[in-house]
Length: 175
Image (cartoon, rainbow, N blue to C red; front, side, top):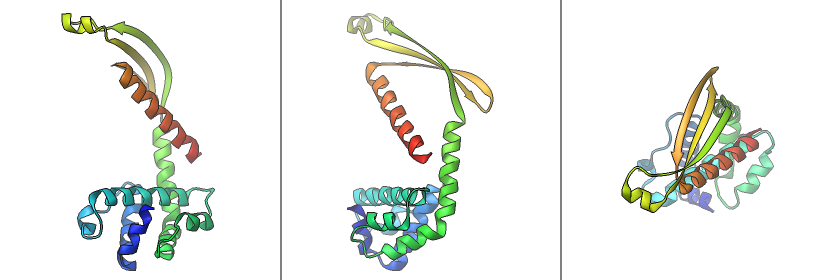
C-alpha cells in the first residue's frame, strides 16, 4: 500500500505532509514534491498524495468512523498522526467537500439535443467517413441559461460518457 511510504518520514514530517494534503483538498496550497524528493520517487509521491487525499476525504465523510479509518491505514507507523490530523481538520474537510459538491451541482442541464453528422469538409476527410456527434446542451448556471454545443468523434463521446459516469459516482458518494 502506498501509505507505507509514510514510514520513511519522521512524525513531524508526516504531520506536516498530512496538513499540507488537507490544505490541498480544501483548495489551498498543496504539498510540494521538492520537500520530499529525498524520500520517494515522483510516481511514489503522486500515489502517496492521491492516497492521503482519498483517506482524508473518506475520513471526513459522515459515514466513516475512526475505526474504519484506522482499518484503512494497515501497517503504517503513523496511524496516530494521521488520525489526529483527521480529527483536527474533519469539519474543515467536510465543509470543503460540501462546497465542491455544491459548486458541481450548481450548473444544471435543462435540455439536450443530438445529431449524427458525417464530416465532409475536405476530400480527404470525406473519404474517411468519420461520424461526428453534434451535442447541444442547455445549461442553467446561476440562474442564466446558456447553450453549449460540442462536436465529437466516437472516441471523444466514449471519454465524455466515462467522465460523466465517474462524476455521477462521486456525487452519489458525497450525498
